[in-house]
Structure formats: structure tokens, C-alpha cells
Image (tube, rainbow, N blue to C red; front, side):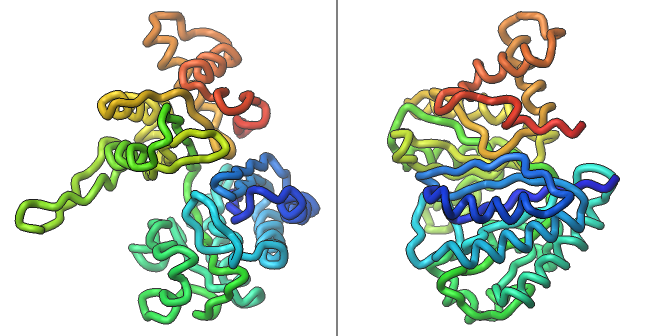
Length: 334
């Protein structure tokens, strides 16, 4: 049976009634399983995960975007996370029985429907992008909400679907298809946003721009491939974080990203205190981390799944900010 996942990010993380209205329309679609809802007050953002048959998932996604345009007003939105729309980003992820090419076709059809029926500017991103630059979400979202009106007035900023018209209440949306991605934040014992961002530049694939003595700029790549990262301060936690997207866990696994942030934090005079998963994680990523840390401690790795998960949670401090519920946070494809 063909199964896809959808992980829309909505620009509301504080009003539970608003979030409930959006998740309610998703859960009401037959053939869709609502897997996880996670809201962040500081980021002012909610990540929703649901899965099911392709047609049902696409219908639920459309209804969620439609509801978000009704209940979220971007004119009053603020938060730590980059954003440019009420439904900021909407990726489709192939899980079983379906190719990436088929998922791309679904994403483009969904983007066209959103543009045509809801009259929103829609940017196709990741594998669904028509333009190489727009494969990168940051390219689609450049200028964020505050720069969107001016961007839409330029040839370069023309959306792939929908009108090139600024809708102040709703902004724009990026719709795409991608592999499984892990959103992961590492907590620091500092409130320094600049320090967190410096560590993010150390480890993310694109690194940082370095200015030479003659004024020329060159890009110095970071340590980790297939990793995007920024640094921010989250007031509700009283901590700065290195916030990452691990775009290909086969290239940079979860535990490798954690260890790299620990090393760079220590080199810059601060310490990692724990970490958090945003949304859900593939089970294998957690099991691999558990095996890595048990081996590092010279302990046996041939233990039950529950012990491997517990080892990963302890080593990476995944329960520092909230209890870690493996049943809710770990995606088991079976």
C-alpha cells in the first residue's frame, strides 16, 4: 500500500485553540492518521505529523492550509523561527510503496490547488522545485514575511503557483517533497545567541562567509554534510540552542551531529546541557545513537530496543526540557 507522510509547520505555537482547529480538520479526514503535534512557544511554531494514503494525506493537507489561513494572522506573528506564511512549509515524504518522483507529482498538484483555490503564493521546494535555487527552503523563504511584499514584486520572487500578490494575513507557503528529515535542537549553557549561531556556522554544511583582508568574501564550509543550522535563544527555556535540520541521516546521523555540537561548544567556551527532537524521529536513528553511546562507554550493544532508546536519551539529554515519550516521538514504519 502506498503511504506518505506530511509534516506541515504552522506559524502558531502559543494559542492551543487555534492549533486545535487546524489539527481537527486533519484528523477528520478518513484514511489519515494524526501521529504527532508539537508546539514551541519561543519559536511560535507548531509541527504536525500525519500519514496515510496519498490522496487522503493531500486532502488533509489542503484543508489544514485552508484552516490556517482563517485562524492565523501573520500581521501579528513573531517568534524565533524563520517564517513567511501562516502555513510556512508543507513537505510530503514518501514512506512505503511510492517513489520520490510520484511524491513530487503529488506535491506539485497540491501546490497548484492551494494557489488556485486559496489564492496564495506557493513556492515549490526540495525535490518538487522547478528551479535549482528553490530546492533550498531558505532560498524560497529569503526575506521572510517582512520582505515578502517586495519579493513578490520582482521576477525572481514570482511564485510557482498562485498569484504574485501579497496577502498580509496569510503570507506565502512552500510546498515540496523530500526524504525523511530530522529537526533537532541542542541546548547550550548560555543565553548567547551569537555564540549559538557561531557554533551553527561551524557545523552546518554551508558554513560561513569569511571576509579576506582585501574585502573579498569566500565561503568556508562547515563540518557536517546534509545539515542546516542556525543559533537562537528560547526564552521559555532560558537557553540558547543550535537548531538543526538533519537532511540525510545516512550522511550525518543524529549522534554525529550531537557530538559535533558538543565539540564546537567546548572549543568556544560553553557546554551542551541536553537536546530535543522537534516532531518525530525514525526509530533507527535513535537505535543507532544508543548503540554508538553504549559502544563509546564500552558497554554491550546487543540489548533490547528499549535499552538502546534509553541510552540515547541519557547520552544526548533528550529529556532535559520535557520527559521523552518514545511512543509519541519515535516513528516506527511498521
